[in-house]
Length: 284
Length: 284
Image (cartoon, rainbow over all chains, first blue to last red; front, top):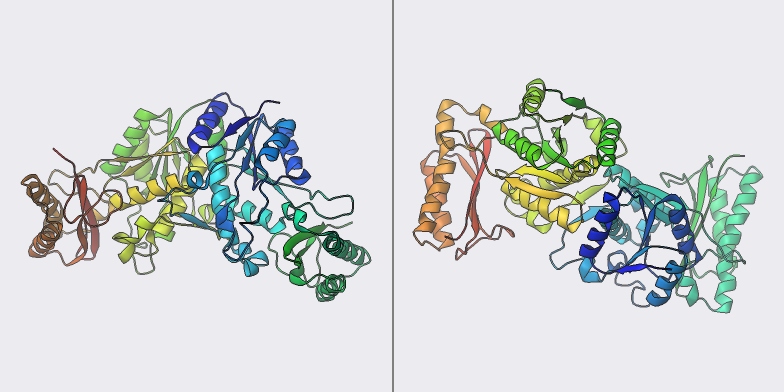
């Protein structure tokens, strides 16, 4: 498989201009590298929907706070490129920090209100960093469609609203969570889990499946559901819960009583590793 | 002349998609209406450079503070459209506030650092409103080139930096100030000036011409130049000076000593009317 590796914005602009001139549609798959099957499923979706696919690999410092795990975040660039090439991705954009944030860079995007909830309470600067870099990447790639994973549920919601608010001419598609056979949602951070921790981590998915069963059985008391979620996680050995919530899928306001569609979301620590998972419940 | 009037974002998106599909280049001329020869010169520049031109007419409330003159800002929509049609502009986008800022709109752009100087000191929220609406308009129109007047010098600098920082695939062109025969820089707000006030208003241009003569004669003391500028304006009857400055043309930091190129900028009130003017000085 032939893949073109692009490392500067100038090269990327050149490539994109060429593709656009020939009327080709472009899909972009923004990633921070350390790719797993979840990312590759986005690449496949993009390949299916568009003439060309650009995967971006950029570990965006602006979305990590100084206390967070930027420095230990897994980096597997060679392998990432190989896997994208195997998927038939034509272009990989892997810029340096300086390419994305030149010295005199000072503009930023203030994310929509929905960014203040959940992740926003625990990582207040996170979504500012996300929407700014995503807007830059959408602009650089002139993408017709951009692909994100549902594992970062709120991220999808925030980006979709940002794109709508700023009239960005890119369609945002959120693709289903990919799970390991044991049910653990794929994440680049899963490599940090010991065997014991991995067993604990499974409680996120199990808790969400329990919520699903409850809702199917007619449970509509959001407060009760959330209380049970927390208890299940703690009983399973989860060390710290940032949030365990059932919410409206667009506004992410707590759903109490539960009205469908709704989404249950969890952010919790297993050891030092912060994990996310979620599940959407629709009617019928 | 045939001009298509567009009032919704959906219609505009449709039109733009059609133009882009046929590979046509698009120039955009963003205005707040109350058009004068300055705006029309931008329309002409765009017509010359691009296959199609979209002029936008939107009196953006987000760039006015509650104390400012939004409610009395001149509105001449019918006449504006006529004049744009006479210039051969193909498309006029004149949306309502609700089209630009739907109820659930909450994202915004924080302008680059250069927005904090000069205008930013006197109109702190102004450039936030400007860059957010300009980014939206550039995205809506998928413009290849966007045209702005040099009369709003700092605006051009701020927008150029925003476009660069966010990698917006639009080129920003700033066109020369158009002046009346007496030298007054054209502005939609000039209609507010009485005959007496207009005579006072001429002191802005006269002051800038004086600075030019001084610099040509070898004056390089920025502090002296600025002191003289203020004195000239006050002596001419200007009631209030927001700023009178000689600065680096990119950073807008005060130039003292004066190094060329430099720009002299004035914002001052004549009666209730706030006027802007500036002049760029290059070597030789």
